[in-house]
Length: 233
Image (cartoon, rainbow, N blue to C red; front, side, top):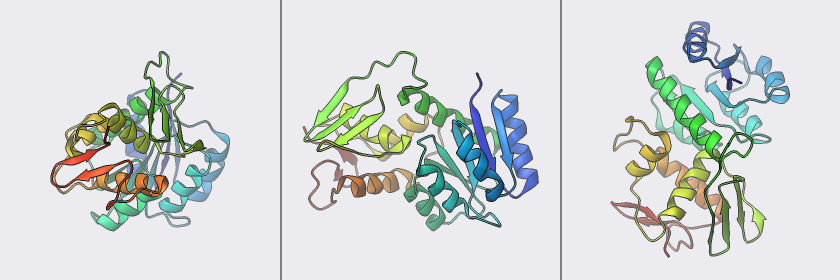
C-alpha cells in the first residue's frame, strides 16, 4: 500500500507540481487548494505525511498544523514563500517537522518527504516491520522506540517524530556530544544543512519546554556551546 500524502496550497500550479512528483514516486496524494477543504480529509483519512503552505487564504498553515497535532503524529512539512526565520520557527514550534522555502527544487522536496517517511515508519509501530531498538531509560525518562512512546516521570510525553528522533539519538549517544549538523544529517539524511540552519535549535528548545528542562541548569539536554548537545551519563 502506498503512503498517503496531503498537500494544501492555494497556488494551484505549485500544488499540481508537487502532486506530479509525488505520484511519480507512487505516493497516494490528497490535494487541496484551501485549508477548509482539507479539514475533512485530515479528520477522516489515515495519512502518512502532510505538506502545508503557510500562507493560505482561509486558515493559515500554522493553524492547520496545530489541528493535525491535536490528534496525529505523522510528519508535517511547511512551505513558506518567505525566507524569514520567524515563519520557520513558528512552524517548528507548533509541531512541524521540517520546512521548505519557495521556490524549491522538486527533487529536494522529494528527498525531504522520503527522509520524513523513513523515520516515521521506523518508529511508528503501525508501520515498523522489525522494530529492534531497546527501551532507553534516563533519570525518569523512558523512551520506547518500538512503540514510539515516551514517558517522563511516568507521564506520557507527546513528541513529534522529529523531537522523538532527536531524543532517541541523544540517549543512544549518552555521554557524548552530538553536533547540530550530525543530528540534522542523521535525521534528514540529506545535504541541505548550513551553519545558519536553526532547525535543530528550535526542536531542542521545544523538547526542553515539553520536558520542563532549562538551558542554564539542564537535567536532560545539555548545550555544549560551539560543539553541540549531550545527555550526561
